[in-house]
Image (tube, rainbow, N blue to C red; front, side, top):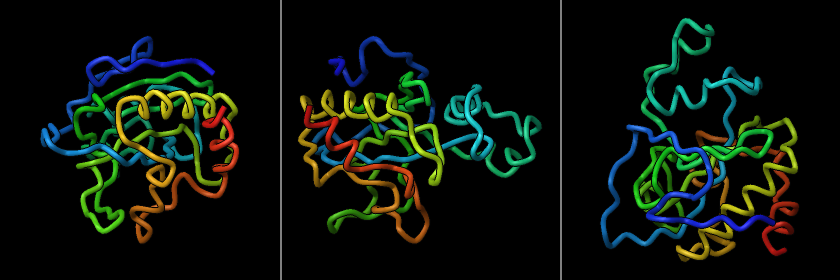
Length: 183
C-alpha cells in the first residue's frame, strides 16, 4: 500500500491537469461522501487522452462519432485512475467537481456539494484491474485522513443517481476494494 498525501486539496506525486469545470465549495460544507464512477472514451476503449480532453473542455468532436454528442459537456471528476493505476487529478478536493449531476444521498440533493468523485477508466461490465483497486484504496485512505468519509459514505454513482446511472457497474468488486482498504 502506498501512502498518498494531500496538500491544499491536491494529491502529492500524481499528475495534475486542472479542469475549468468546477465550483468553489461553501466554507462550512463537510465533505463526507466518496462517489466511485467509471468512464471510457470512446465507450469500452481504454488509453489515450480523450477522458482528460473531456474534463478539460477540449474534446475534439471529429475524433470519434460518439464524441459529437458529448464534446460540449462541462463535466469533471476530482481524479481518474487509469487501467495501469496512474492517477490524474483534475479538481482540488476542496472544490466541487462536476461529477454527480442530479443526485441524492441520505436525504440530501446535489451531491457535488459534499462529495469527492473518483473515476475509474473502465466500463460497467469489464473487470477493473488490481492496480485500480489498489490506487482507489490509496486515495481513499488519504482522503479519510483529511475528511470524515466512513465506509457507508463510499458509494457508486448508481447509488446516488439510480434512475440515470449504473456505474461503477456489476464488474466493480466492492469486497475486493474493502479488503484493500482495510490493509
